[in-house]
Image 1 (cartoon, helix red, strand yellow):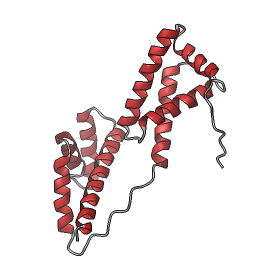
Image 2 (cartoon, helix red, strand yellow):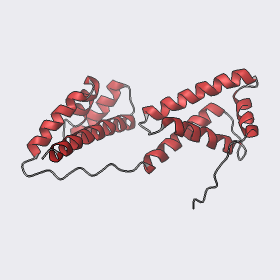
Image 3 (cartoon, helix red, strand yellow):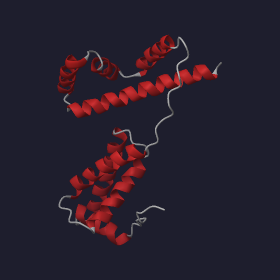
Image 4 (cartoon, rainbow, N blue to C red):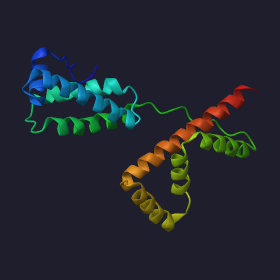
Length: 184
């Protein structure tokens, strides 16, 4: 059994949360809906499964916290909490199946599949991933700084973006390999 007790949202804490958004109930409702849409977009942008559920979880947890600690600014607090929830969601996301063992002489087939999967990427994603892995060692670090700067991204954001593209490519190649081995 889980250590955490199940939180049940009741009307009173929810009303207090809405009042923190705006004293006017109608305006608070509008701000709540805007916040909810923003959170759903936030989770989708971060490739989180079930963005709507994570949005509800975030709001529930913030409402629960409002009774335990003083929250100065609600919106920044909710967004900071959403980052934590997204991180937790990625940690509890089950790893995908391991890629199948390549058959003897299958390296050439994998490269063909990789080429096909690269064609499925957006042009900007394809350029990013090719430039990201272009050089070796010392030059690679400088290239990544240059790429991040040209895209207006922090180096960490660039790494995350490249990782997600690479993960999609790996999944695509694994799917194609599985399809060809199942056809046999």
